[in-house]
Image (cartoon, rainbow, N blue to C red; front, side, top):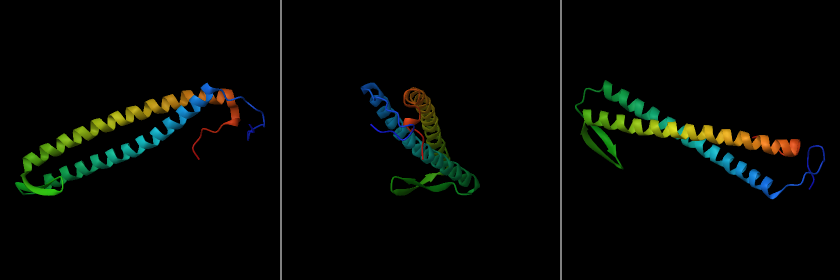
Length: 127
């Protein structure tokens, strides 16, 4: 096995390979979490915008999208629905960010282990 670094050969054990694979899976999950967090933040911003628009309107009944259909719903009900949806999205966002922190911590531990054994013969950094 030829390496880019110093040209030294380090045997890759089954355990090492498992750690490398685990790191790869965690890196993929990190990218998924980043995408999910971005969507959740955008959704929360949209709910905030909708809530602000409701404050500005003089209408007692507003159009509210349910699935693919717009229905005329009392303004108060729409406000409470938006608040509920925003709360659910905020909790989801919080859980996603907690999971991201956990994944980053696990990846940092795996980096220590892998770099300790392979030094510069392995690259675990994003390009």
